[in-house]
Length: 335
Ligand SMILES: Nc1ncnc2c1ncn2[C@@H]1O[C@H](COP(=O)(O)OP(=O)(O)OP(=O)(O)O)[C@@H](O)[C@H]1O
Image (cartoon, rainbow, N blue to C red; front, side, top):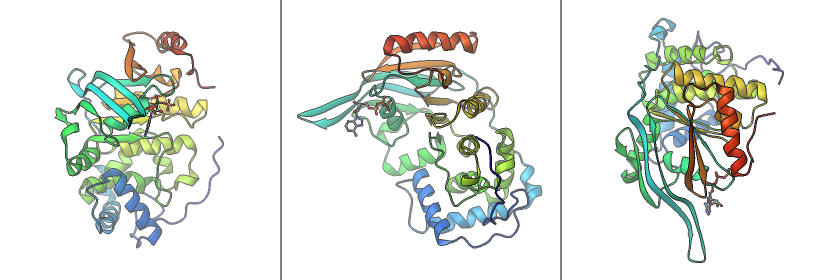
């Protein structure tokens, strides 16, 4: 889609993110947006009054000297091998008595550090339920989910909130950027909520944006960005806190084929060069062909698994399509 340039309106951090300027007071809208994002990052532990404190820290972070901003953050590549995620015999039952759905009926698998894993399966097979359980949006009926050696199924609400904030990064189909914040502010807010010292925030945001090719849109608001730019800013927001695991839910589902390809190449780079461990739910075999391994879910259970190995992406795509066709052929190449 052609990008229409609109002069950015002054933000709370100045128009140029590399020269943040004097922080302006946040409007009531900005504050309520901050409340929303803080709640998303830390739903249960979020305390009244935290928004203004968080906003203050964002403002300080963005206003810190640009010189301090060169303490560039880059996630250290993690060696593949040890599992970051272990899913053990999880079941999820919805409803009761007359109307019971076994959305997950004993799912087990591991995701090793440094893997990029795709989850595919027909509609209603349990992909979203699985993602929701790993992301702690939902709870399992039985079984265990272990992330970074800790069983999240036994955590308290407060521990879960901290876990989501510290250990997980999210990329949704709709970028879920806050409309009233610029790209810079959206990314920096993730660091602020995590408690990152204000002086190191601009450097980390600018460095991550540069790696993901969105340094040119940091002063723009989401409505001034293309769909692909928004997704890449969302990816930068997910990556900037160096989470153990990035969960992506149809990250290219709303993009045209060109923007989808750029996004997938960025995610591949996040995995291979920046050490991100990624689990991505997708209907799209083309998107899945960028991963190292695809797990196929059917009727709430792991039905098949394909590993890419040294295969070309095209060859992997062809094998994925064979399984998709066998399962009912609802996924395919983005047009
Ligand atoms: N809150 C709920 N209450 C009752 N049943 C549910 C609920 N959420 C999901 N289900 C059922 O669980 C099963 C798995 O749903 P899920 O959304 O995980 O599938 P999916 O593979 O993500 O599907 P799609 O590809 O269409 O998004 C389906 O039969 C669905 O109807």
